[in-house]
Amino acid sequence: MQIDQAAIEKAIVEDAVHKLTGDDDLYSRIKAGIDLRIAKLFDERVTALVTDTVEKIVKEGFERTYNKTDGFGRAVGQPTSISKELETLVSTYWTARVDRNGKPTDSSYSSLSRAEWMMAQICADDFTKEMKQHVVNVGGALKDHFRGVLNERISLMLSEVFKVNSAGDQALKNRGGSACIAPPAKPIGTA
Image (cartoon, rainbow, N blue to C red; front, side, top):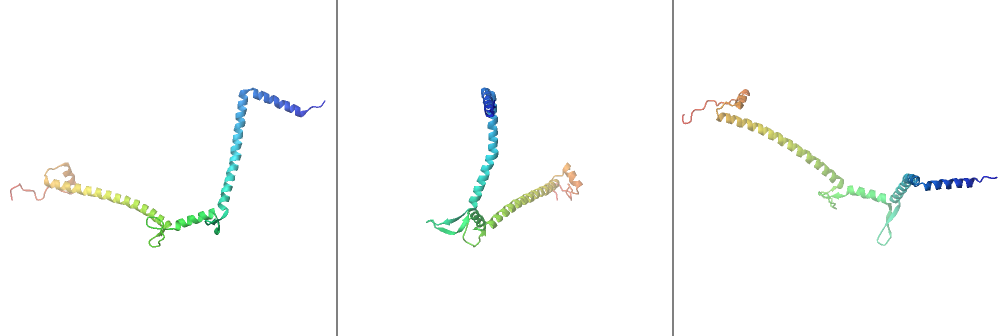
């Protein structure tokens, strides 16, 4: 008597499949687990593979050499690449001559490089903000000083006009001022 191992394995698998597919709840849980595992494997492996492939293609595309052509398809100039062209564009952007408003100009008379113009704008903005703050600070200090001087002068003038010994007059006497007129005032109409 000979044991057919393949037949036994097949029978076990068929029995397991029959039991698994017969129990809907168990089948749903197993299917969800398998789907989750497939999604995880896909996310780990396929996403990484796609990302690497895209990065490789982009890098090769930027570094691949080509020739510029004229309107008839004839090569013009030396072979170049996208990365070299971008480098040239960036460097010429900053060295391009601009007028006082930052607009490109061909004139060298009273023009700056775009980099110089940009730095001047940044410095001017910063200087303007700083100066505005200083002007506000000086104006506030001047206002406070004027307010104090005017209050003191008006207080002295009122003390000289009215001979009432008020609480403010007492404070003035304590500071060395006088609330009385020297010499004393004479009645009106007398010489």
